[in-house]
Length: 560
Image 1: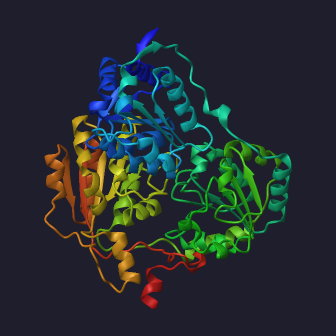
Image 2 (image 1 turned 90 degrees about the vertical axis):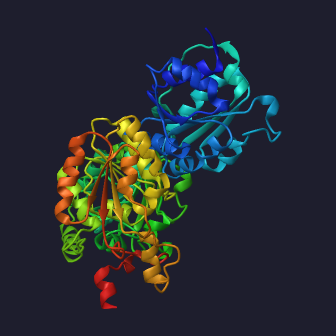
Image 3 (image 1 turned 30 degrees about the vertical axis):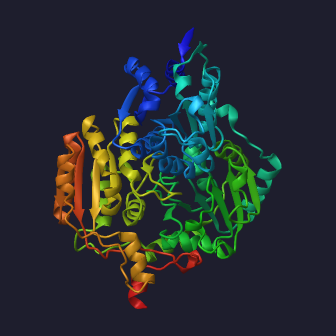
């Protein structure tokens, strides 16, 4: 059939099973928006308040559903406003296709109005980038973009289309989309697995370190089975939350800069560390020369570039984690490491997470949300102290229930991501935990939530400062609070109401549970502002670059 480029874009989206697009129109992309208008019953478009919000919403949709998220923007500033969201998705291996339109082909490279080489701008932060200058290439390019976004290690792909291509006509033939399973580049061997089996047999103190790849590959059942077979404790990264049951007796909490003492000390003492879909981030390892220095290290990852990149390992296995673990588990016999598990349990009892429960605090807020939602909510966060508290005190039992900017650390991520997550998982209670500093950055997306009556709950942890930066200034910069005090006249409740949302302010512990229960019952966008002291700190903590065994908490600071 003969279709113009804009109609081909929509037909390709339908081919790929896309039901929702997040975006913002403009001159160069008008033809595509005209085609979307004609197919509005098949593809739901969410108009965000800012293109960055669209990128974060597509990211949140992808993380919550496992599908490819799609966002759109016009040329020039519209396209560049997507960049932070694209980089966020790239760092956290999120499948996304960003579609932008550019000026017409004769105007390319001439500093035309609203012209930007967005493919060039995003080259370092995408798996691949295309600029389509011929309508005959449009459908194959879009299909290839989706295939790349979801195959192997997922990530964002950019497709930039010149405006004349969106109007040009060519023959279009529908095709069935290729599945990601046919594109998993596994390079492992039986001999490698046999070596790992021998490592496990010889180990007395094995430890499993679980990352975001466990969730992406849907290997959570296999990971849990491995932990049972080798009788080992399990820690996770920020991105691995929900990949292992946070209520399991084997679970020791997060590892790294704000990980538990049990995880950090346990990994430092283990003699075998098995890393599952984890990249040994600097926030996890601290001083890499001192990380798990008593252990053999096994790393299993889909991306060969991650093997030995940050930490030298004894065995690196490249392959789909679910596939590798399924095969490895079949080779294993049940191990018994009762003495080691008792050591870990003793560490848990000696070093529990704790906070001042005499007043309202973020840990209390998170625990209340966990209790009221019975751990079944989908949590998004921004970046900072509240993010760490949300990782520490909410017990995630299922994958794709904790969405956070782990690699890039993007302030302002949570609200857009929560919108996307709620759209993708409408039956879930979706709650965004935000700091007051982060919330200022993209709070205009409350208008998006109220426009479509998307029932997200935004919990603002308001300490009137940039909390994590202030914590560093307190501990390492002699309490010189340079540009981190936000004690001004901004009233978040009035802002929320002005943008069409219900607002609740919480100042005491007793008010928290009724507030969250009311917010859930309203089934409409709600903002809960929680007022906490400015100097609450996230503990435990490891100084940047220090060995994770040097983890300290509030008691250690008091005793110094």
